[in-house]
Image 1 (cartoon, helix red, strand yellow):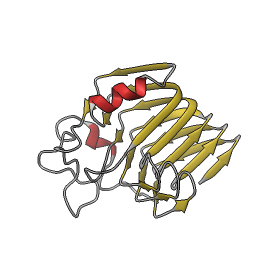
Image 2 (spheres, one colour):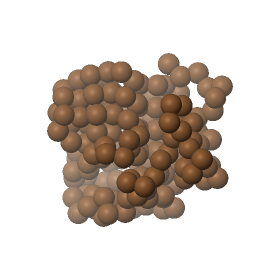
Image 3 (cartoon, helix red, strand yellow):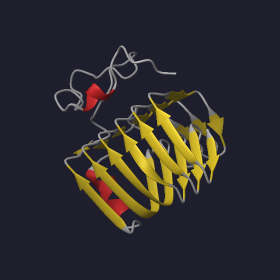
Image 4 (cartoon, helix red, strand yellow):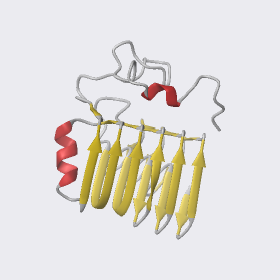
Length: 178
């Protein structure tokens, strides 16, 4: 999906198996995005933002999952530049332990009740952002955490922090994902 100076509304959608130079699953510039109860998984970017590339874009990501994407240079799941992004009750974390995951460069990031990479990576984001705030997030030790059961996409592993945290309720087995 590519957007320039547009409004994007993504609801109950699976974005998977796509390839682009930037933003394998979704690329947006000077746009407004609203993503609710959706998954961006297994996309590829030749350069940055395997799952998502947002430049000068504002918006909200709620009850969604960004994981398992790849990029040729960095920011496997997402690259966010110069915008305002609000993330609520979402998972933005590696599907495999060696993924590069996220990069934020300038702008404002507000994250609440979400699962993110480790605190060390989060602290690094803060240095390049105008404003950063978060509440009640779970920070994963990427090398020691398994979110999903091997072989079952988006089914939580026995030791997953998704269990008993209410985050997994965002994707139900009866949901229709396109």
